[in-house]
Amino acid sequence: MTDLTTLTLSVTLQKLRDREISSVELTRACLERIQQVDPLIRAFLIVTEDLALQQAEAADKARAAGEDRPLLGLPLAIKDVFSTKGIETTCGSKILRGYVPVFDATVVQRLYDAGMVMLGKLNMDEFAMGSSTENSAFQITRNPWCLERVPGGSSGGSAAAISAGMALGTLGTDTGGSIRQPGALCGIAALKPSYGRCSRYGLVAFGSSLDCPGPLAHTVEDVARILQVMAGHDPLDATSMPVDVPDYVARLTGDVKGLRIGLPKEFFIDGMQPEVEQAVRAAVATLEQMGAEVIEISLPHTDYSLPVYYLIAPAEASANLARYDGVRYGQRIEKGEMWPTYKATRGQFGPEVKRRIMLGTYALSAGYYDAYYGKAQAVRTLIKRDYNEAFKQVDVIATPTAPTTAFKIGQNTDDPLQMYLADVFTLPASLAGICGLNVPCGFDKQGLPIGLQLLGAAFKEDVVLRAGHAYEQATDWHTRRPVLNDEV
Ligand code: GLN
Image (cartoon, rainbow, N blue to C red; front, side, top):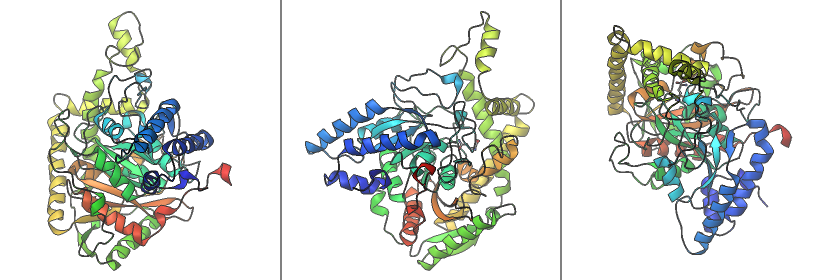
């Protein structure tokens, strides 16, 4: 019998619909796989085994009764940044240990309504601040392609769980690259939807003007199926947009004829790993051979993205994280008096979170606000304009997702700037609020995956998905799976 954990979400869904397999069988296979390989990978913070099996049984019953829903019986797992009713939600932080939400995030609720089986909660950088998952207060997640290396971050658990075959789809969040960059480093499909496409309600807030929930999976079609369920206006999130949600799978035509692809010169910079540049250029050439028109473009304010992001994101984070005061959420370290209690409670934040709170508070403080935060906002508008202009000329912009393949655990931990540079290629789209997809496009000499980033205009997820899916039809990078040590 085929190992069920080697299949994609879309193929598995068909097998469930054809009654070739049951959700209970499938869920058991995932749980066994988790038991077997997660001690090496450490992607999961919590495995909700009993809940998963109950939901799988219910899904099988529903199907036997003639029901069909978009994700009925499919085992998925969720980044620990999403509130999950009855399941501890820590956001990778000690300060939220023991916090059990009494409600589900809207996107989680929508996945349940679509029939998902919940496998558990996934590791992440504390409060989603980081690019390697090393900032988790609990554990280090390893890259399934090489256990000495990081899976990327902050949704490192979400990417590693897919690549190691432990779940068929996962949810992550992307504030500056946290879905796309781990997607690239783990060799899977990963989509940051446009800002406002998916509800943020129930998401532990980091940078409220940037945070975007999105799906990760083996293929672009899988990602499209999950997005279909997540997307759409939510009255509980005033920034979610009441715009139409197209039928994403129906738009995966398999061709790119006539599609105009922009290649921004600012994204092919010194310091990038040469193999990454070669693989991305080769991918663009493939798309051109398939009938796309490739046009060189310029996004002149690209260089400012990193400083602008590292003013705006920490500024918003410092405001959002003020709520962890030991009174309302999670942990309280009681020291009798208010100030010592507050200090001890907030002292539980890890070093990166503290750094961001200090940076953000400084950027927002009287006397510096205009010079830092105000200026950053003004430049953000210029970056956004670059993209508006570019999308008058092209349908999709192709770039590398990350400047290097997966780096070694510990390599960048003492050098925050080096760590921040892991996101140079993903930050601009976050600031512009547009959508971006990672698709695997090759491997370096060490056998580590390389990612192609396809950016689309706001709410044009269907266009980037179409381009990514067509690319997958012409290549087989997305079909490769890592061999884990215990399987050798
Ligand atoms: N790595 C970036 C940061 O540390 C982006 C994180 C994210 O997208 N959540 O802020």
